[in-house]
Length: 298
Length: 76
Image (tube, rainbow over the protein chains, first blue to last red):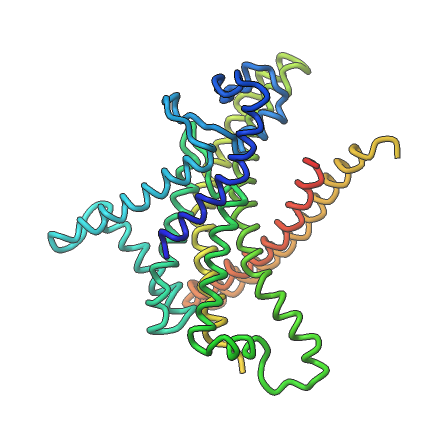
């Protein structure tokens, strides 16, 4: 399930931009060789630089390596995927000699929290264990993707709508699976509305509940995407204050340097907090929605 | 209608401001009530905090829907 998730996310992240990469490279063969990583040198406007930082780019060369990846976000998606697997391996290995140490003990705290406070409480005792691996992979992937994106020269892969769509789609599939595996396909759709409602109410309730099935993962998708994008846009915009103020007056530009850096640093610290909150919220809402379909009101 | 793009920028700016006012008021009211609840019943602080984050997430989600529309207006 976890690997399926990542493959889907990779495929979705790569497909539209990959086509864009071909479009860019076909009219001008020179475009493929010149790295487009330094917009400042080509004299772009601050708004373009800002968008360059937060949007995906076709053909990304990490750290000037000779290998080119299809897109920037896809590279960081794969990097975070490797990181999650690596951290999990290290954590498992630390159990070999009795009590876990180092990374293992940190991971254990988070895993125990997700299992006991999110999965068991939202989905139900016993049943929560079945969905804990999925919820944990959501949690660690979103957390690491957000934290990884705060490092210099990196990007947040969850700040891409395709990636969050894939995550939300897996959450949607798990929600439907929770209902269908327990009550059957027909029973699951019957459970959407409480039993024994009067007829006129059903006319209103059925469309609302049916739409609600899709708006729940849609909200998950938009929430994660917007939170990841907004933080990075804000940092970039605050750092853009200096080049925006300098043409107005040189003194204003120089005065703006500490203000801009200070505010950007503040938002950066806030982003660390947001990374944890968003990982928690995505996991918690997924668990709540799974629980909602596993235990319908009746 | 001399410059429809300018009007879109204006709409996006005003709209995002209004969306933030709504979201800020909602989360502010929620946090105030949660603080009050924790002050009255400190032993339930953990549960109140958990419920607060869930509700804040839902309010935030609705606000972000509005903000995404504003981004779409700006980059169209």
